[in-house]
Amino acid sequence: MSPKFHELPGAALSRLSWQVAAALLALFALATALGFALAARWADAPVVLLYLPPVLAAAAFAGRWSALLAAVAATLAYNFFFTEPYYTLLIHNPGDAVTVAMLLMVGLVTSQLVTSLRGQAQLAAFHANRNATIAGFARRLLTCTDEGAIAQVVAGELARIFDCHACVVADATQARLIAGTEGVERLTEADLAVAAQALADGKAAGRHISGGSLTDWQFHPVRAAADALAAAGLARSDGMPPVEAEHLSLLENLLDQVALALERARLESAGRENIVLRERDGLRSALLGSIGTDIRPRLHAIAAGLRKLQRAGGADGEVLHEMASETAKLGGFIENLADLDLAQNQEPVVAGAVSIDLYRRTVTSRGEPVHITPKEFAVLAELARNAGRVLTHRFLLRAV
Image 1 (tube, rainbow, N blue to C red):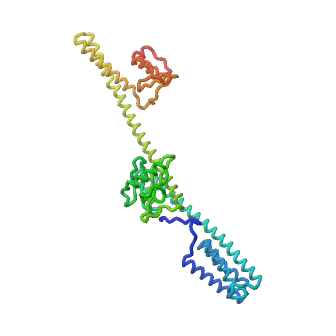
Image 2 (cartoon, rainbow, N blue to C red):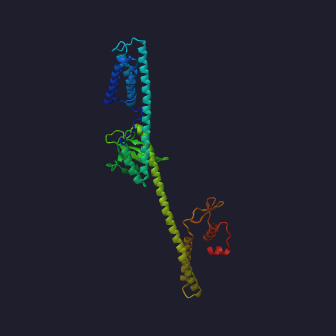
Image 3 (cartoon, rainbow, N blue to C red):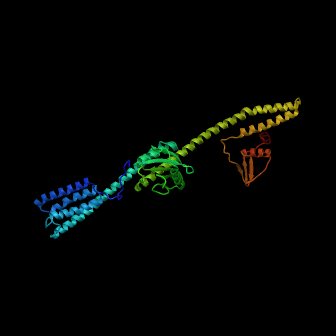
């Protein structure tokens, strides 16, 4: 696995390699040689302390069980070489029996203490390594601005961290491959079916999990709230599980970072779309204002000319009447367009139980539609637009 993770304490029993075993044997031989040198000058009393360093070394570098074995071996070596009768495991002197018993007890206690300290150091290193991995992963995701870039980074980083093949699949209704590591250009129908299952259920699925006998992949959903935004696929060429049990929590933390990145990308995309819509609405408002300014006076001039021709009576009255009618309709359309402001809130105007929709030109009372004539609606709409103001009769006639 690259980068290598520290093994969690207790995950597996520590085993002596031949190098460690040789080093411990050398320490025991050295302790015995020094013991003979000291015993020749100061008797056997100080010799017992020489067998503690090998026990401490075994606890620090080889683990709990090796330290316990070293403690027993140190007790037996001291008993064999430095208690009467010599070169046997028998003890005749009660004082020697107490010394041997204390040596065994001290060796066991110190080995347990040193092993506990070693375990705490391993645990701290494991968590520090995991936090550094998550932080580096999050920094890579911050540089991505869209779903495709995020998926490419996720596939590459998961493959590097867990030393396996990786891909990202999205869309539960029709699962599709977004990105994959080198050599992963497509997924089979069975792979996509298992990925769709993981997306729909929000639970991991695939090989070594459930429902994945036909696929070599494991798919883990990327969840945000109750929805699965995507699924990360992991697989190994040798068929072994791509993520060990003790590293599943790390994978979940990484997928949480992916969910945050996808949510951020979608929010940014929605923000950009809103900006485009606002700019488009501003352009429409400007065009509508231009229509009201440029076309309305010309329509008024046409209508005035038609009225003048009708009064003069020199033309076909039916044709003039039809032209005046069409001009009036066109004038009404222009007035409606000129009054329409897309930047305004298009929610209905509510007055008590009455709701007036100025844009759909409907009126409801207590939820029931009210049928009124176009001129009545025009008056009502003008009053609704100017709520709280006093409107003169002339203003209403001109507006309607």
